Length: 277
Ligand SMILES: NC(=O)c1ccc[n+]([C@@H]2O[C@H](COP(=O)([O-])OP(=O)(O)OC[C@H]3O[C@@H](n4cnc5c(N)ncnc54)[C@H](O)[C@@H]3O)[C@@H](O)[C@H]2O)c1
Image (cartoon, rainbow, N blue to C red; front, side, top):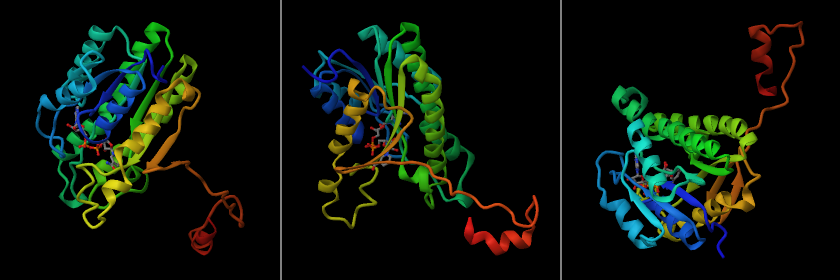
C-alpha cells in the first residue's frame, strides 16, 4: 500500500532536476504519473521529447505517460490535459514545477525576455492550475495542487527581475486559488525549493558539498506529503524546503503607528518617525 495509491499525478518539468526526483518518489508511493517535460535548455529555449520519455521509462511505462507539450502555451496545456485524460481518465494531483531562468538586469531587459519568462513561469501556473481545477470540479472530486515559487520571488534578486516578478506572482495567484477552491475540496500550496540541479549548479560552484547537502530528493519527500491525503486540509501555504530543513513562509506586517498631529501625516513627521514603522 502506498500513500498515493490510485492517484493520477501530472508533474510538469518532470524530465530533470526536481521534477524527475518528484516522479521517482511519487512512483514509489503508488501514483500513476503524467511525466511532462518540454526538454528545454536551462533558459527555456529548445525542445527534446527524449527528456520526458527517459523518465517515463525509468519509472515504468505501465504507470507513466511521457508528454513533451509546452505548458507556457494554451495549446500545450490543452494537449497535456487531453493526453492525461485519454490515458488515465482522471487527474487527482498537479505538481506544476516546470521552469527556467531567462532574465536580464532591468536596464538590459527587453520585451521578448520579459514575456517569455512571465509566460513560462506565471502564465503556465495560471493555466495549469485552472485546467486541473476545472477538471476536478467537473468530477466533483477533491484534489491537491502544488505550484513552485523561489526565495527570489519573496526577496527579489539583482539581475533576476522577471524571474522574481513571476515567482512572486505565483504566490499571489495560488493563495487566491486556495481560497476559491477550498469549498470544492481542492488544496493549493506552493513549494519554495532550494536544491542542487542544473539551474543552481553555477550558484553553488564554490560550495563543494552542495550536491550532497541540497538533494532534490529532500524536496520530493515534502512534495509527496503535500500531495497525499494526509495533507488534504493544508492549503494556501508557502513551504520552503532546503535539504532536510522545512519552514513555512508567512507574510508579516508590523503593528503600525498612528500619526500624532491629527488625522494626516506631514512629510516632516513621517521623516521623524520612519524608524518606528
Ligand atoms: N533548483 C532550485 O534550487 C530551485 C530554487 C527555486 C525554484 N526552483 C524552481 O523549481 C523548478 C524546477 O527547477 P529545477 O532546478 O529542477 O530545473 P531543471 O532545469 O533541472 O528542470 C526544469 C525542467 O522544466 C522543463 N521545462 C521548462 N520549461 C517548460 C515548459 N514550458 N513546458 C514543459 N517543461 C518545461 C525543462 O525542460 C526542465 O527539464 C523551476 O520552476 C524552478 O524555477 C528551483
